Length: 169
Image 1 (cartoon, rainbow, N blue to C red):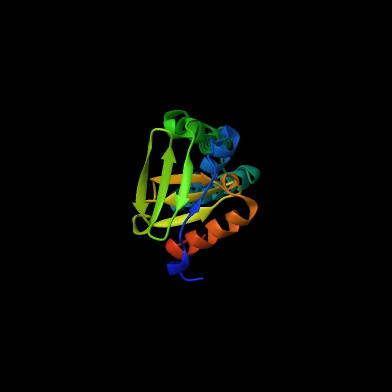
Image 2: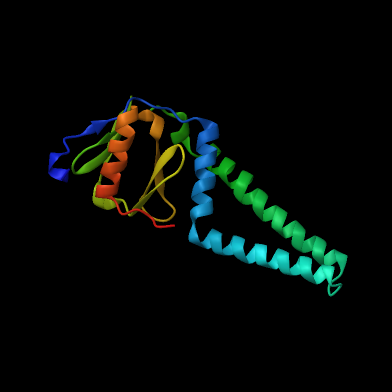
């Protein structure tokens, strides 16, 4: 259906579930290109150090340090960073309604609202519980899928697909 036929779609009011938001933030961090590259390099380094340790080319201490680096990075990306972002963002403690219109995406709460033209979004991705709408690689807004009725989830996905370029992972 062409965009001219879209008259608007409104979600019900929604709040953010902490556990789902943490999972979405993990998804965000893991899908970032620079983090993917760093994780690959750290994993290659860990495998290389394990091989070198096995063949007695490096000391146990060097292997321990490389393993510790791997664990620290995984803990940072999986636990620390998502919880820091969650605690800092007031957005996750508010109640919203999302409105997808022909020309704009609008978010509202009891105190007011804000609209963005679809062209202001650079990309979008879909995680298990959210649509991530990106303004740039670091600034984004997440909309819970459960804010929409069952059929509206598919319609929201169709509108996003039509209006915003999707990141190819």
